[in-house]
Length: 281
View 1 (cartoon, rainbow, N blue to C red):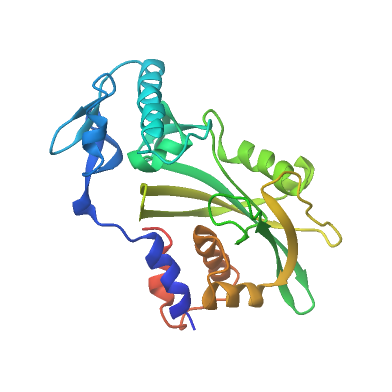
View 2: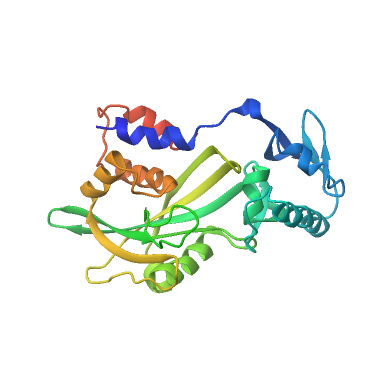
């Protein structure tokens, strides 16, 4: 049963460490640079000092470093070496220290292998036949995973924001949920992964929340990111994750975590231990 689930966890934890060198600020690793991209950074000595063993950020105050890295990123977008500029700033941290060291545009993060944090909210309803989940369908115009199934609410944590304020903001923007309703949500843990992609590596930390939705409350799209919502039996959602590729790549993993926590996956199921371990590598 769970072999089809484990493939999603293996996918988001697949990367080749030998293809990367650390991105350092002082002696702290803040990212990972693919070897074949490092020479492009050497063209920007005001921001990056490139060596065979590591790429080092040139020490300076946070605002000056933010500006220097942004200048490099914008020029690399123009050269076609960075996919896009998002005009969304993310804080750069090191390890488990949540203090911001400087800021980077969201579009530049994967090329630099810098950790990005986000929130995911599982909205569910208990009915006579079991748990049902509110599942969003992403807009067909989204650049990443268009038309895929998604959690009820999800979004990146921008610079200067924390998980809770981001959750409240995204819930209103994506699903028309009031702050009073979102206040009932419970923080239930994290999922993290390190995933190599064409544009670099995604080092993602996702804060997870559960919200038991009142009967009759229906999420409604409030921006152009979500096309529609549907209330699905949790067993059908599990089958979609297990048997198809209809769900956004990282949402598969957060839903698997939901299935474990709510007893839809249990000890004794094949690969149960590998699944639980893989959720927080």
